[in-house]
Every structure is written in C-alpha cells, then in structure tokens.
Image (cartoon, rainbow, N blue to C red; front, side, top):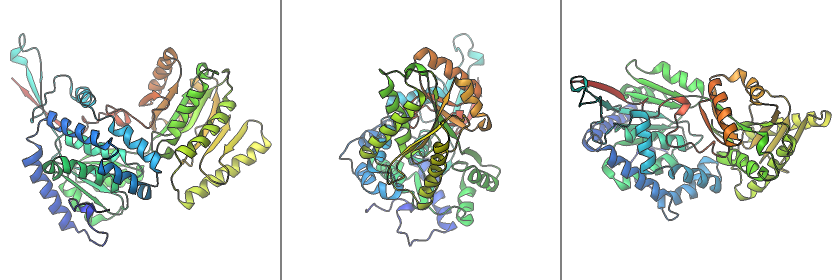
Length: 458
C-alpha cells in the first residue's frame, strides 16, 4: 500500500524519529493551524466532515477500499466486522448530528463563525448585562490512542477539527493504518486542513519522544488502560490539560416482557449484534447479559438461542485473528465452566466446535464476570434490576453502557434506576458499540472538555 508521505506515520519502518523531529512537527502544526484552520467557520468544517463521511460510505472510495483490504491484517478484525463498524461510524456524519453536538455542549446560541462566539442574555431588556461567550480550542491537541479500536481515534480527530485545534495523534506501534487513512481522506478534500494534522506511531514508554511532544501540547487526551493514564498524567507539564478515558465495562439487560415467542428472535439478534461488533473488544461491549426470569422463554433457553445465533454470525461475520495467549485464556475458562456444568445444574455452556470463535456461559451467580472477550459472553438470570446492580457493586464508577431490551415504559424505569446507580450511557440492546455523535464519553461533554471560555461582559 503506497500512500503519500504527508504524515510521520507514512514514513518507512526504518525511519527513526527524534525529539527534534517531534518538536519541529508540532511547531509546523501550530503555524498551519493559525493560517488554515482558525479562520474557518464551524459550518465550513462540518461541511467538510460530512463530505468525508459520505465518501467513506461509498464502496468505490479508495480509502475505504484500502481500509477493508489492509485493515484486517493490522487490526485483526475480519473484513465484515471492520466494514460494519466503519459504516456505523461514518453514518453519524450528518449536519443535523454535528449541530446537535454543538448545541448540546455549547448551547443553542452558538454561532458558526470563526471566533466561536455565543451570545446570551435578553438584549432588548437587559442590554447592560448582556454577555458574549467566546470559546477556543487548544492550540495543540495531542491524542494518545489506545489502538484496540479505530473509531475512538477517528472521533478524537473529528472533535479536534470542530474546536479548530492543531492535532498530533500518537498511535501505538502497528495501529496507525485507519487513523492515517482518515487523515489522508481529509487531506485529499482540503490539503490545507490536512496540514493541521500529524500522526506518528511508536511503542509506549519512549520518554524522549513523548517529553518533546508533551512540552508542546496544550491539551492531551489519553485512551487506554488506567495505568497508562496514570503514567501519562504524572509526566505532563502543569500547564497541560489532561483528559483521560480509562477502563470501563458494559452490560446488557433483557426484561421478561420481550422473552416471548413473537420477540425472542429479534432480542437474540440484537444481543448478538453487540457481541459481534468489534469482536466484543472495547469498553462498550457487553461482557455480561442479565436476563430476567419468569419470561415465556426461560433465561437458559435465551442463552442457548444466543449460541445458535453466534454460530450463524461466525459464518457471515467471522471473528478476527487472536493471539495464542487470548486463545489459551478462552480455552482455560471453557474448561472451568465445562467442569462446573458437569457437576451443577445451574451452570451451562455452549461453544464453537474446533475453535474459540464464540462461547456462551449460563450461570446463576449474579456477580459481574470479566470475560476473556473475543465473543465470550456470560448470561445470568436475575429476578429484577436491583439484583443485577447488586452483582455490579464492586464496579461503581467503572460502568459505561447498559444495553436494554424492554417495552418502552419499562425501559424508562430501568434507565432511571441505572442512571441513579451511576451508569453513564443507556441505549437499546444492539446499539452498544454504535454510540451517537452526541455521546458524552464517561458522562462528560465531548467538546466541552476541550475548549476554554472567555466571558465578555457589556
């Protein structure tokens, strides 16, 4: 695959980066941002992003084709899984969604001029007290990407453009392909905007390169393990804003009302959607699905049907490659639950034959179990939501998403219960790995965390 050398990540593997190169790249980004990005209106940037998103949805688009041809080798996701995940992401790129995001984080009064101005106050009655609110993004926004999923990095780049910030994305070794392709697609649409982006990849812990990068940054976002967040935060200069997205877990919840012959097939399919999406990797994937007892279809029957559906999905959307260590972990867990199932009536297991492609474990212990991932799911029967939340007691502050399958009225009740407990995102089952553009990651404003406000009082 031959891409023009627009970014440091495009250089051949033998090219060596140095702190001098990183510092020079940051200096160039800042200059280009002043010339080419800051003068743009928000409306212009939205128009560009929508055009880029529309192109990524076209089968003939060269960047999409490259992603689907070379992406499986780098990301270890199958072509079908990769395609579904990217399509779900770029379908969000509409003017309505971007305006909703801006209104959500900045208020309805935000304008689309290049200064980021919002007016407030009733100027007719309170002219003397009217205020202008001017927001600005970081001069240089640095992203430390996790690399296990591509979409969070693509979203970080998108948010940075909306705040009109120069951006430097540091990818883990061997994970820069999809962010590069996205950046190249922006560069092709508008090469001046493309020069306000930089991407590079190196292994974590390269102190010299990272210190050079952090010294130039105004804001650093980090997505990854909690220990990674702590290590980066400890090394940042005091003036640098830190935004971290650490480890989170998610779960599904199925009400007894949808465990009926008329609705069970759709419910099972939606649960499989969430497990298959990105092969169950990422904080938004369910590791446990709680299923209410006393439905017309029993909870263990649901687990059995889920196994049948995952076997079908393995043909249509096969799981990607996994490491020997991950396969060994799945085999070890399977052996444990096969032994328990042989001696206890309250444990059952369904699994793919001759592979580790998928696994369904049914058990009555309501405690949240950490799954080996890669389509290994726990199904746990509960009498009601309070018991499910009791099983999550040790994870307060660490739960991201609850995917619910229930009638509308009960969904509202469950949402209120889960929200009071501390879940930061609640969505329909089947949409857990497809958050909207307006999603508040970890309950925090996506754009609002990045910008700084100036109030200008009359």
